[in-house]
Length: 392
Ligand code: NAD
Ligand code: MG
Image (cartoon, rainbow, N blue to C red; front, side):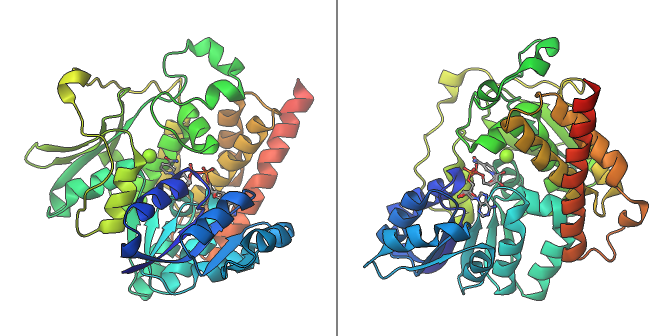
């Protein structure tokens, strides 16, 4: 029986994880479940799966959670500290499925107690990879990829000599606007950006798919997860979302991971690793699909991909700055304060202003410095937005 905690259980990855746990409940002992505002969902899952503790990130919702859990025997807690403490409870596997850099400290707490961290929360790796890797190493803990492309790479690398890898190709659906005329992108609405052609995901990552900031984060994630050189990492638009990634070797072979766009595959692979177990994903009918197409992304349409290259070159704190600026720009887009293309402008401007030279070394990167860089980048993003508003 595996002791498991799910951070961000009420979200899209969290619910897919719960779906898998429910199918073989005898394989799991659920330790901690954490969520945000959806107290009903959090409490229902905690009671149903007999979790030890349920935690909401919002301190003011503690009474609501207590009421929802009354008589169930599930402990209730609330607030950021409680969430980190829940992640620190001994478990074999912790699913890191909080959205944003908010997942960083809980993820580190899970690694500190020696758990395997199934990492969907790519933002924490982009912002603080050296800290995550060092924490894992010090505590004999492991990080497994959950992002579909990185799970695909991980699977293609199994049994291979990493030194024989020559290239990696990450595919991208192209998101909601892949076929839109370029001059209309600036007028794209939140609803339009929130409508992904192939994947059913949380709103933030769906909009990040339309702007390609998600792919930008994933390119950095691939570099930080596997240690590939930036020029080894390629991105291809693949509208069918069937091939998730390809790994190229020095003999010219390309190993592709092929599967339906269903996150339960990548989640299940991490839950069952190193074994494989049957998963409730559709059997692909390649003859019915007929054609798989690939094309090079247009950098004019997706400046985020260019910015990812800059971040990989600078390293240091620039990943934290990039991610925080992106999170803040996305907040403003969702709130209706800025247009779709303004997100690119804000992130680029924040990177220009906030990436200090001395931060371009990995030596001396501490959690405090990452959180400080994150904080300042958000303030800077707000400034850039205000300056833009005063010009128009
Ligand atoms: P979501 O928005 O559906 O769910 C996010 C979860 O995090 C919710 O449980 C929410 O309550 C919680 N949360 C939000 N803000 C929080 C905060 N400040 N503190 C604590 N908890 C907070 O998001 P999602 O689509 O499930 O994505 C989760 C993570 O997985 C993200 O990092 C995303 O990039 C990554 N990911 C998602 C998918 C997908 O298919 N959805 C695929 C690959 C990677
Ligand atoms: Mg992905």
